Image 1: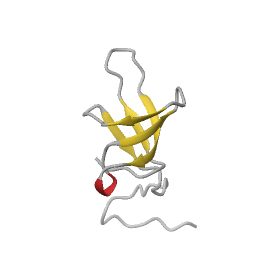
Image 2: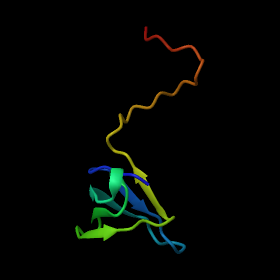
Image 3: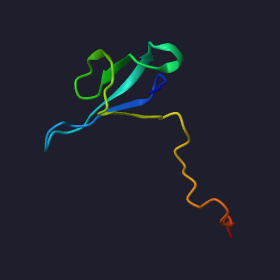
Length: 80
């Protein structure tokens, strides 16, 4: 699992009704952007060092948020 500063980290809830927890990756302290991650949690503002488990996801917020909706090989729509 790799992350860069500014990526969003999401830890899924473990019990029914328990919300997911989100935070911002401030720093990746492992080699090549790997764990452990220094994370600022959205709900508390606390900063912790996290060694993520299988319940953790990384959302790269640096990518372009515009997603291409056409399939590979399909003709592109031309604006009129």
